[in-house]
Amino acid sequence: MARPKAAQNSAAKRRNTSEAILACERLDLSTADGVHKDPFDRMLIAQAKTGGLLFLTHDRILALYHEPLVAVV
Image 1 (tube, rainbow, N blue to C red):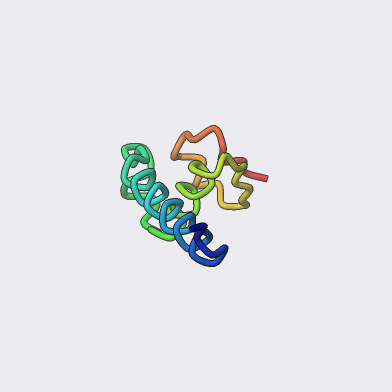
Image 2 (cartoon, rainbow, N blue to C red):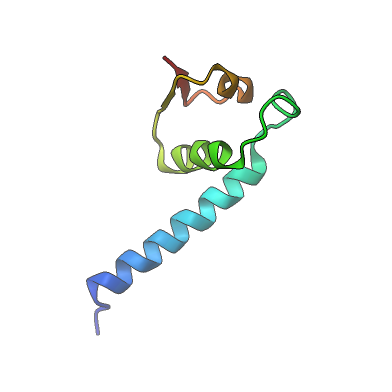
């Protein structure tokens, strides 16, 4: 029996969230540590990383993470 669409979406969201949490823990904090302390920004970067997205920001401090997907505009 096929799972309802809502259940499929819920499972996909949990998987994406889990992947983002793991990616957040793997971010290189050595260059940004002490300068940038916002965990929500790190989570946004991790979500962009796991989703294969470009992360656009005006916050120049986020460039300290040296992630190619972070573009300071």
